[in-house]
Length: 450
Image (cartoon, rainbow, N blue to C red; front, side, top):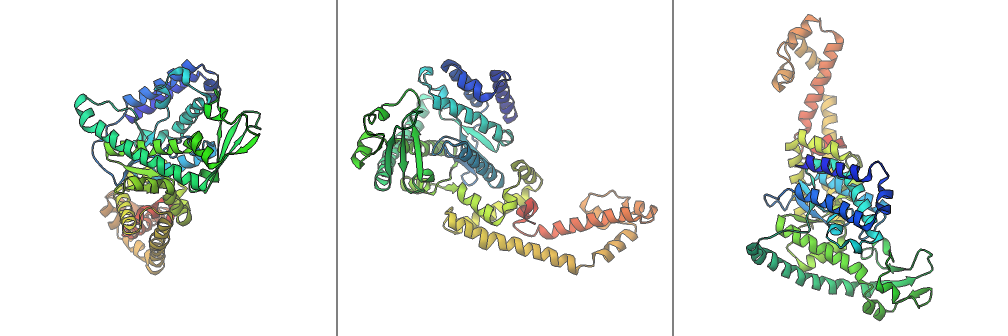
């Protein structure tokens, strides 16, 4: 199913652009064409969606908008790419599956007449992100989550409606809490000196506002909130009452609430856990749902970057192939890491880095020392010569890798140095791996931490 999904999405994009540049094709298209293209992509994804068969909250996740490549809280292509890369590394190194919020359904559910310039840019970003993620989508590790879920009358009354009411109550609570937090810590400036149109500049603590400052530009048609301040001075700072009364803070609040509400909905229906990259948002989630399990991608990424940069920099597909080849070792490493996180304060960034620094890295360093000592102290050369000279290769036969007549072959060749050297290298490599497998973190060692 996932292979068909990728092939059909690729075909749809290729046919629609017809050899033209993707960005130009979308920016120059009519609103109806943008709507129809988004609808086709959304329907392909819906047709090939896989139903979640069992709860697996420990290793199945629903990502927030930022990790899904969305425009909130920062629409910069650089930021989007960084988050997608973090998502891919997390998925390859830890998760069984990660559901991301798909960018096409939101446009496909709209009236074509309401499509704005920002929607076109989000469509471009969504396709670009898809192309980056497609190898992991094809493997079924990254999946698209659905915003629109059909229910029969019975399940609508017994499942959907009670859940929606519960989420709505939490959303109202969240909106009040976030607005209060922003009013206490943020400033808002209206600026219409830009020749491309007016914009709001909202500044505050980086834990609350991405990069410390975020800009909201007036895409055409200009929203009413921008027209409220058109007669003010060119650069005008809003008072707290104006910030509250105008609703400008909803530019930040609404996406956060929508994001958390979607995760609440999807995790409840699919038995997944929250996947975030913002500690402040994780606190907000915990404030309305203290029982939720949430993983922090930024904490995970920084733990790896600081302690095992060579592993974190590995190609996700190479890590997935290693997972297939060394599946038992992967499960052992992941379970050990999960236990360490459970015994600590969870996915707090400082705590995750401490675990990598004080628990994971010392064990890997100890493994390296053990292997170095084993190489130096063992009499490998003598042992291998005796094995090869006897006309049998016990280790190779035991592993089931070398053919039964390999001993006779070596003897017939007179112990040719090239043949003997090859077998000796293999013998040493095999024994070295057997030594390393005793570690719970053999998977990381094999992934590049050696």
